[in-house]
Image (cartoon, rainbow over all chains, first blue to last red):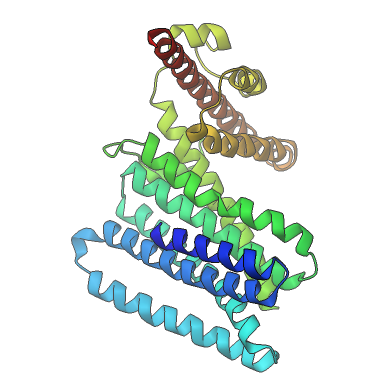
Length: 193
Length: 133
C-alpha cells in the first residue's frame, strides 16, 4: 500500500509536469507499474507462505520466486531485443504483461494447492481468488493492448476500472469476512446437480 | 502470437476465478439468516428464487449506499448476468446445467437480500445517530 501511494504521488508529479501524452509519463507509468507488480508478487509469495505454513518451505518459495522473476525479466528482454528497436519503451510494457501472466499462473497453482490441501480459511480463499481475478484481468488487458495498440481511447478507461478490482475485493474481505470464518473450497468448484 | 495466447488463457482463467470468487461471496452470505422483516419485504419466505433478483436489487437501490459493500454487489450482479447468459445458451444444450444455473441465481438473490438487510440496519444506525445528535 505504501509503495502504491508513493507511485501514485510520483505519477501525479510526472503527469502535471509533462502531460498525459508525453513519453516521460509513459516511461514512468509502465516502469512504476512493473515495480508495483513485483510488489504484488511478494504479496502472493506471502499468501503461499500462509498456505504452506506447516510444511516449512518458505526458503524454497523465496528462491523460486526470485528465479521466476529473473527469468521473466530475461524472457521479456529477449522478446523485445529480437523484435523491436525501441527497447526501453517496449521492455517495461512486455515485462508488465509477462509478470501479470506469470502472477496469474502462480495464483492458479496456489488455488490448486488450496483445493488439494483443503485450506478452509474463508478470508485467505477470497484474497487468493480476488488476486486471481486481478492478475487474469490485467494479463488479458495488457495482451489486448499489445494486439490493438491504437485503441488508446478504450484502454484509458478500462485499465483504471480494472485497477479498482483488487483494492475493493481485498477491502471487502478484510471488512466483512471474519478471520475465524471457514469455508470448504471444494464447494466453490463443485457443480450441484 | 504470444499476446493472443496470453489473452485466450487469461480470459479462460479469469472466468474461472470470477465464478469461484462470486461463489465464495455467496457462500459467506448463505450462512446468515434473514430477519422476518426482510423476508416480508422481499417476499422470500422459504427459499429464494432467481426470478426475485431484480426486485430485491431495486429495493437495495432504494436504501442509502454503503461504499464497502458496493463492489461485492456489483460483482454478484455481473455473476447473475453471466448465469442468465449461460441459462439462455449453454443450459439449453446441456439440460443438467439448467438446475445448476437456477440454484446459483437463487443464491444471488439471497446474497442481495442479505445486503439489503445490512443496508437497512445501517440506515437505522445513521438515523439513531442523528436523533441522538
